[in-house]
Length: 140
Image (cartoon, rainbow, N blue to C red; front, side):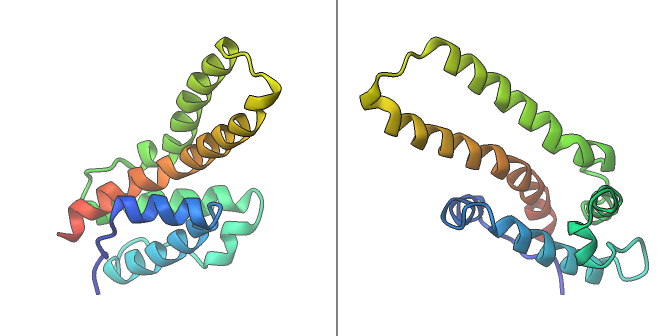
C-alpha cells in the first residue's frame, strides 16, 4: 500500500459539504497510509489520541514527523507542525482587514454569514490542502 493521490478540489469540496468533518476522516486515513509506508520507522500513534486535549499536540507532532519521513524531507516536520497556525493567522488578518472596510446593511447580513462560512471552511481546509499537496507529490 502507498499514499493515495487525492484531488485537492475534491478534498476542499468534501470539507465544504461535510462542514469540515471530512478532516477527521482525512487525518485517520492518511495516518493509516503513513503507518503502512513507515513500517519500520516512526509511526503515528492510535487515532483516538487525536481527540484528547494536550496529548493531541504530541499526536500531531508524531503525525508531522511521519509526514516528513513519507515526503522524504520535502516537508519539514516543524513547518508541517506550525503550518495550521501560520496559515490561520494569515487568513485571519486578511479577513479582519476585509471586515474593517466593509459596512453591512441589513440586506447584506445573509451574504455576510455566507462569506463568514466560506472563510471559515477555507481557514480549516488550507492546512489539509497544504499537507495533501505534499503527499500527492510522493504518491505519483
